[in-house]
Picture 1 (tube, rainbow, N blue to C red):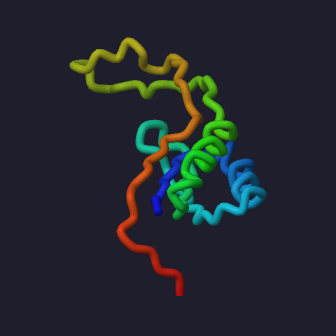
Picture 2: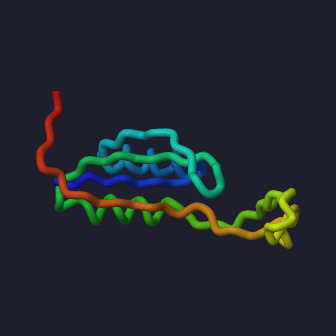
Length: 110
């Protein structure tokens, strides 16, 4: 048995949730916040049999898209900091998924 933690952008979370339901994959869905962009994410916690791990990873990969997004860098009031980017939009890549697969020592359902 494996534990899969999948952190996905909120824009992809409902589609992934629906794919999990269609594939009979049980998942716990948590609202989380990313540290870099401070934007909404969803973390799925999935306990799954070893032989279904690749199936779940494929669902995640096929559902969660990377996309480009513009955001405005903050203006620094400290003149000692190089703030050449301050106030200008910069392009960053968002979306996709960050996935961790971990072994499970034991599993209990009550």
